[in-house]
Image (cartoon, rainbow, N blue to C red; front, side):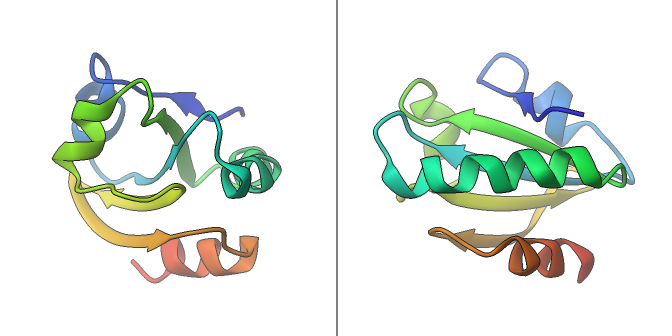
Length: 105
């Protein structure tokens, strides 16, 4: 499955209102080199892991969502469970490190 694109209009529906689902949200930007490096890794996680919902939020176009979750750097990865932010990581990461962060919940 491909990552779900989230924005201010559907963030609550796609992330906050889902119970019992681990959700990885990739906050990225248009002109961010590390974000482009992470794109194939995020796509791989979405394709390989049916137990994880993967979302992408462009913070250049959704500043209010980024502000709400105190996202100041690109890329930032937040993990949600039962509508609550549980984990975060900033900067480019190895796929294994992102998976480990999610599985620790």
